[in-house]
Length: 307
Image (tube, rainbow, N blue to C red):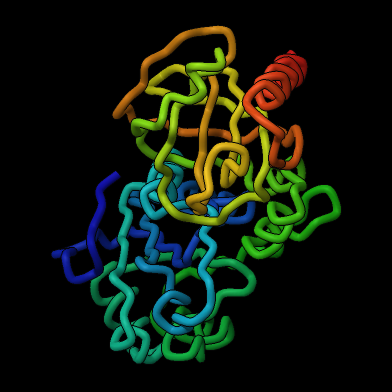
């Protein structure tokens, strides 16, 4: 997959480009349907599929006072989309100036002028241009006038739920990992680097990897059964996502992972933690012995989950 930092980096696209446009946060089941359709159309015409997206998320610029809870970091999103067979990935630097571009100018300058789209694939709720004034009806008219094929993907549903990034965020906040993962098409995860901790877990027989993870949506705090991905390997593990009330008064959310039944030294390694099932809420214990007993029980529960 060839990546571009904005449309201005592109010199000349082939005339047989199939373009899809959106934020694609989470790259969920609905997004995969849209992108998969674009890839299939591009393959059928011997052209390339181009995904056009934005960084940062437009909401971070247009509504800076509201919290932005991403389902995927920008790097995770790009990697997931690459796995869908896309040829070009255009990540537009979003700004207030860019947000003022009219729908007609965006279509003529970007979709036609630079990307040279012969086909466009978008979702049922697509809007574009200044204040999202470019409705599907306007896009359909512009495509017809330019001789560009337009395909609109209808709303997707799974297990009686509409698939959307906002619905998945709601489910994750509720702790409904099973349904959230079904809508996502993959497990929610954090990626980051293992950093040195206070080695307290090692002294009680449960060494942990302290993961400094990249910011995005924070799951409900607690203890989880997780898969710990390092390179090409995945190990069963138990993780505490929380503020460590028994041993710390510093505040801030930390992620500590204990790999089950193996000793690993992962300092400075890049890792990913895939959340499987919540075991319990985080709570404060009377001391280290009670904490040690509970961790042993958590580890055993995680083993049962992975069986």
